[in-house]
Amino acid sequence: MVDLRSNEPLWPQIVEIMTKRIRSGQYEPGERIPSVLELSAEFHVTPVTVRKAIGGLRDAGLIVTHIGMGSYVANKLP
Image 1 (cartoon, rainbow, N blue to C red):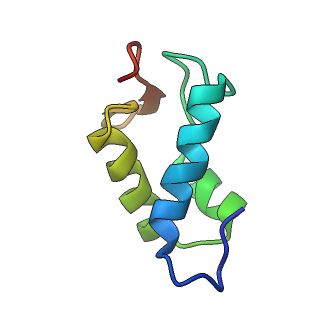
Image 2 (cartoon, rainbow, N blue to C red):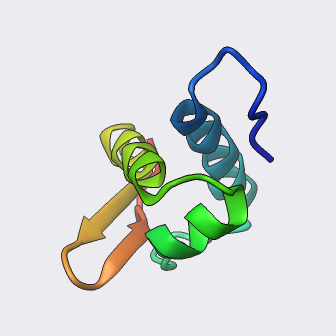
Image 3 (tube, helix red, strand yellow):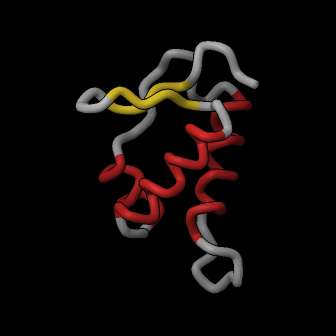
């Protein structure tokens, strides 16, 4: 869970959590990850924060996003 009292911004905390989930196999390659609204509810943060985290995961090559269809774990992880 994110630490709301930490000095570290929330979105990198979410990137770290989601990275661990992807690398551990909780989310398989090609599998859709939860939506922005689902993740914002889970982490108790705004959708804007989750969108920043999704951007970080995408920039790291861990996920791919298809507009209107969601975000999916990359088939080949870096």
